[in-house]
Length: 301
Image (cartoon, rainbow, N blue to C red; front, side, top):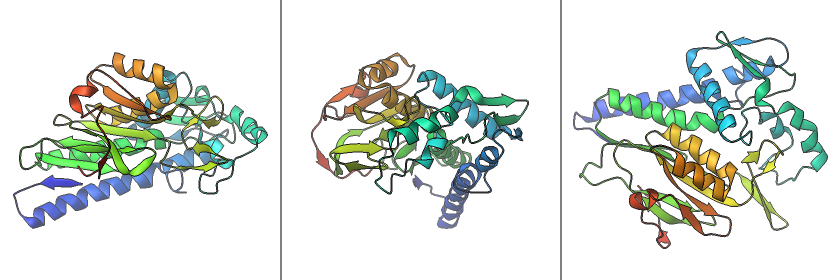
């Protein structure tokens, strides 16, 4: 996170601590890896009883279900059950029958959202809000900065970015997009307008290569296997949340359908890098970046 504030070091440090605390709050509340999170509580009660949730949780679950519909079920917030056989740190490729056995537990239609409660109708189901939570945290951090009167900032959580205003020197922010196959280099730079969100989905974030095949964490929920064809998608939108949803959706839809989705979406621009290395970009993305561009060192904003 970088921001410009001329009201003194103590105030700037207090603002920074508040932003960090908000990011920790969201991680603690929604991580499926924390036993005390609301997501873990929902999963523990799968097939048993609905769990009362607050408006924030209700909104995130609703957004995840909307994303499932947008992708024709390729994205599914109940894909968490598949993590039992997919461990991207171990380098193990699960047998097809292990994946197949878990697919009945991956079903967004079996998520009941009624009267302030969430209920997974089948025992063993697991919801995972990782597909929408990180970008939400970025936007929340930007909102806090705005409320504190900060007029120039860039917030970045693991590659998802939200800008406020322009750099302190008046120039626009510049966000580098990693080359998915040479991660010490950037493929192109994005120069968003002020108050924009930039999100990237890539097959390099968590995964491994075995016998010449790349296995990564972006799974097609209909099959239980990693999506093929796209190496990364970068999207620019009004918020990091909207950018992240469309980056995920276009990655899952593939090169042609993904590009068409971005072209048709209002106030959304993006670029898809194919596994083979070529780039497809929306017409507007070419105005916000240095595409087609050549490789250049470093990815600093």
